[in-house]
Image (tube, rainbow, N blue to C red; front, side, top):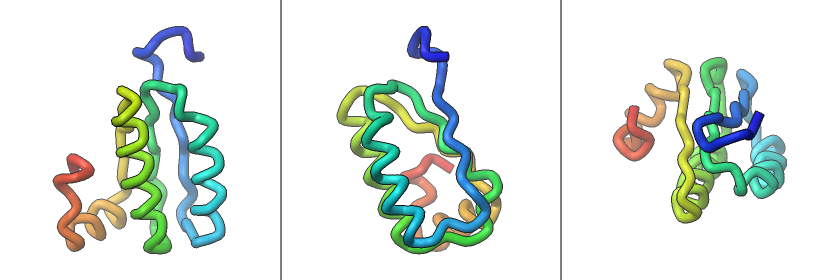
Length: 93
């Protein structure tokens, strides 16, 4: 699955992301940092805890510093929320 940088690890998120999941996501992400390309599949998200936005920012910056990239696939709910927060451009949506 990880034979070259053109391959991307796909991480699918559930419809509802509460605060307890975010702390687990941080642990999982720390084990994935050696990958150069990760797709965050958030197409099913219908509700999030605000800490999830912090996790997205942290993940993007951390991978960017190591020369990697995160591709964000977003549900209409999440896209709308980030637009209202003025963060759409940061996540390139």
